[in-house]
Length: 231
Length: 373
Image (cartoon, rainbow over all chains, first blue to last red; front, side, top):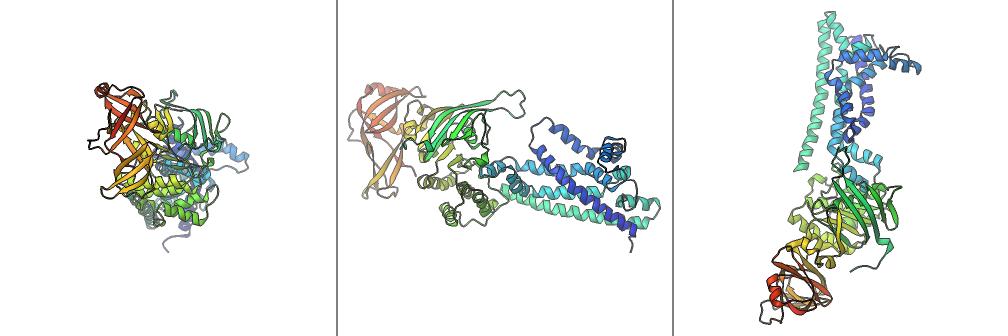
C-alpha cells in the first residue's frame, strides 16, 4: 500500500475538517448571503468586503491574527476559556474556526449570486399565494437556489481541503489532530520522501479534479436550463 | 349596470404611497400616489391610465406589496392597513396575476397549482380544481414545466393558480401587456368568461383601452398619481372631460342584445335602450348579449334624417352638451339616444353650420359599429 497509516490519518482529518467547515459555513453563510443579496443598507459594502478579504490576503496574515485572537490573552481566547472550552490554537476546533473564516467567500458568494438571480418577483408571487416568509424561503428560495447551494458546498469543501497557510499558523502539525493532507505532503517533501509525497499529492489532484468536474457538470446543466427559459 | 350599494363589496381606500429612487438617502419622493375612493367592486373594475400614472402602485398597495405611507385601506369592512397595523400580503384574501406570468420554474404546472390550493383559505374539492383547469384549458398541461409553455398558456396557468387560493378579490396587473396580439386574443375570452361566471370581483390594471372596452364594468382613470374619473365604463367613457385624454379613441360603449338575423343582407340587429343598430353578421346567436363600441369619430350629425345615405344606422338624438376637443378644429358632442349616451367628434365648422345648441334634436349617423368579441 503506497499510503501509510499516517497518510490515511491525514486524509481522514482533512475530510472531517472540510465537512465540518462546509456544514458550518452553509448554516452561517445562508442568512449572511440572503442579507447581502437583499439589503439596501450602507453596511452591505463593508460586510461584503470583509467576507471577500480571504480571497486577497495571504493565509498567513489571517492565520496570524486568528492565532492572536484565539490565544489565552486574545478576545476569542478569553471567551472560550470563560465558556470552559479551553483555548483553540493547535486543536481541531481551532482549525475549524480558521477554515470557516478562510473559506467564507467561497460559500457566501455563490449563495449571494443565487439569491440575487431569484429576485423579488417569485417571493411576491408566493406571498400573494398565502406563503409566509419562512414558507417562501423553504419552498421557493431553497429549490430555486439549489444550484447555488451545490456550487457553494463544493467550492467550500474543496477550498478547505486545499488550505495550508492558515492550518500551519493556528494548527501546527500535530498527528491526528491538526496534521491535514497539505501539511503531511509538506512533511514528506521536507523529509525528501518524494515517492510518498507524489502519492498523496497526486490523489489530492485527482480528488479535487473530480469534485470540480462534478460542479461544472451540474452547473452546466442549470445554465442550459436557464437558457431554455429565455427562449 | 351598477349593483346596489353593498358594504360587503366595498373597498375603502384613503391613503398615500411615496416612491423614491432606490438608495436615495434624502428621502425626497420621486412619485406620490394619493387616493381617496370608495369602490363598490363587482365584475371587473379597470384601472386605466398612461404608464407612470400610479395604477400598478395602487394595485400593489392593495395587495400589500407596496408599503402605504399613511392612511387607511379597508376591504369589506376589514382593515388591511391603518396607522396601527398592516396585514402582510400572505394574510390578505387576494389573488394576484402579474404582467409576466411569474410561474415557479422549479415546479410543474400541477405543482404550481398545488402551491396555491395547499395554502388556500378553504380548500377546493378535487372536482372544483378540475373545473378550473378545464375552464382555462390547461388540464392537458399539468405535467409540463413552465419553461415549455407558450406565453398565453403561462398566463392561463397563472390565472388558474390565482383562483385556486380562493381569493375574495382578484388583482390583475396588465395581464395581457406582455403578450403579442394573437396571444391576447387567446386570453381575452377566458377573462370575459371569468367576469360572467365567477363571483370574485376583479381589479384590472391596464393601459390598453381596448381591454377596458372589452372587459370592464367600472372604470377608474388615473393620471399622475391621482384618480381623474371613475364610474361605470359607459358613463366614464362618454364624459366630455375624459375623452380628451383618450383622443382618437374616444367613444361610447353600448350594451345590447342580438334580436334578429337578416340572412339576405348578412346583418344582425342589436337592440339597446336607445333603439336598435344593424351590424355585420359575425355569427352571434339570437338572444345573446352584445357589447358594442361606437367611436366618437364614427358618429356624424345632421338636422334631418338623410334617407338617401349609404349609412345604415341613423338614430334620432338630442344634444346634451358640447366641449372642446384636444384638436382645435374639432368639437366633442355628448348626445342622448333614448337612455343611452353617445359621443360624436365633429369639426367646429360643421357645428357652426348646423347651429348646434343644447337640447337640440337631430339625427346621428353611425359609420361603423362592431360587436366587441
